[in-house]
Amino acid sequence: MPMTILSLLFTLIIIITYSSALKQLITQKQISEIKTDFINNMTHEFKTPIATINLALDAIKNPKIIDDKEKVQKYLQMIKDENKRMHAQVENVLRISKLERNELEIKKEPHQINDFIQEAIDHVSLILEDRGGEVQTHFNATRNTVLLNDVHFTNVLVNILDNAMKYSMEKPVITISTENIKDFVVIKIQDNGIGMSKAAQKKVFEKFFREHTGDLHNVKGHGLGLAYVKQIVDDHNGQVFVESEKGKGSTFIIKLPLIN
Ligand code: ADP
Image (cartoon, rainbow, N blue to C red; front, side):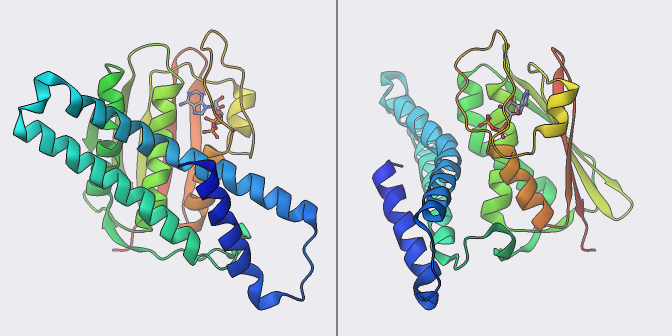
């Protein structure tokens, strides 16, 4: 998504947010801070779908694939799905009438978490394939109905999966499991990546925190993805933690309340 569209979106949001309260004075500095924050967040959210669309387009252009109708259909469907997700994201933002995070109300509906996770995996499958990686799933939760906001919770899972691929020196192997503990469903997303220090584990959900990645160079980011993850999980009355060992990989654990 080009920056100009993001800037335009931002302007719209500022108008929507503040038109009913024109008398309220916002300083130039506040606007500038909100704008930077917003653009960083949105840019982060659009990175994975854009990468998937690019890979799908490259695949379709491949002379070996162009005559395989089934594969072309599969890649076209992926492009459509990613496009839909970005569109939903934009719509969501436009509907937001208050920018302050803790005042955002996001609509949630019942979902089967195991199916929901599988769909999130589909969003990153092309990138994972491209990196020669794989995902293993162990859906052990038998009670798995939870209240989720479709777009935001997909982003939560995609952010964690995206990091699992990004912060890895090897071919990423990601293991995802679900289980029931009391009236919760516990989701574990384990990677074989570079891991993180104890100090980083404490700070990783804070805004703008990034750890030095050692030999893994050029990993781009703003340190906002996991802050967003925590914000959304909190909003779902859930909890998110990380367990990690440097050089051995990380496991992100999300606990969500069941609704039946
Ligand atoms: P970003 O990836 O844009 O820097 P995040 O908020 O998603 O922002 O992550 C914050 C930091 O946490 C990263 O910069 C990285 O140092 C660390 N991190 C996140 N996920 C992982 C992971 N799966 N393995 C190792 N380190 C990670």
